Length: 483
Image (cartoon, rainbow, N blue to C red; front, side, top):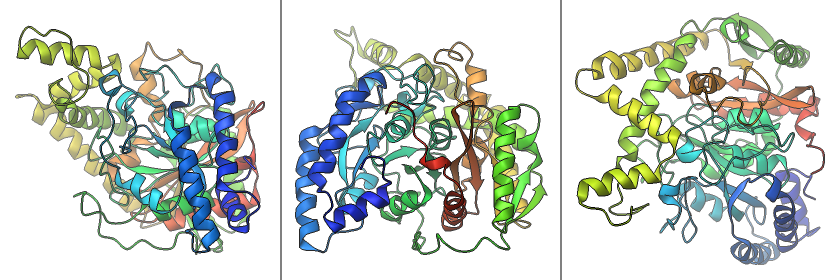
């Protein structure tokens, strides 16, 4: 049953082929048996999950249960969950018990899902390999000597290893799509404002967006349906109607124009990864889509612009963690200044400190115009490139990452090289657009991801294209050996 998709499990639950309690116990047993070698979970709530499953079985028996009722999922440990630890994989919040649910959590709860626990991640979502977690690195189920990607690496590893049916993630510069690509999953970053950020601990407020991490596009559509929609608690959440994401999954792709940005297929892309993407392009042609060469001339500036904007916003958002109200507090401070300094020094890891320092410098008097303002101007140029491209095409197709997953520890001593892992994903966040990564032909037994980028609030079209591709291929059904 654990090899079935979320949609298939939901159908089996509705038909009474398995109970939610049985399915939840199956996953809890797998977590106990397999997660020691993966470190995908920070917190497992077995008692709470079984209680939710029992309640789900009652709703299913009544005949009026929602579509996702009884399906076990996991939440990235950046979403506040009432009564459970919400740590952001940081010593700073190791003992923080959230007093309320994030909107994403509450909406999925209303949809009937069972929450198995909270998944590991890069500390405060800052990282591309899930090696900055205070609880230790997550390992990729396809090769445990390699990284799962980040920052949503725990969610990606958990879904890939069949430790849950699906999981939530967050994407600030590629943190859903990049780990989805490296773990052979479907990962969707919705349009900025499509999903509420209330209760999602902020890294960079103008970039962060929650989304689903699943086995296939159909599952992503089901989860997004429950997650999306206006939330008056979040001032950045758009008052935009939510379409039926499942209704158009099977629409024909004939006449669909897909753009291929030349900049994404140039130097820096691994040749074997490029060949895998080309196979997928051929499949889209066979399905009736028209492929068009396009240009995104300012994409090369996305990484430097992002690593000014994101650290600047991180510096502001993380200022609240000072040892006074909540979070880690140093012992026996001499005075208030000592309390601030030592609490933050002890509570934050190296990468978080690095980004706070970069962001504070970029925002400081005399440097704001030279760095932060200039980065925002570049951000607008990048957004303009996409606007121009979408005058010619309906979707944009590109690699998700320049290479397959790399070895644990391979890039930890070179932050710039690590940052370049997100070179194909960052521009989408700067522009606020939706994008989705799906598996294509693997390279040397390791997963490869292909990225589809859509117009603002164009998630339905993305999911349709991905679903039709997955109907014609089986890469999304492949699983790591030994799981």
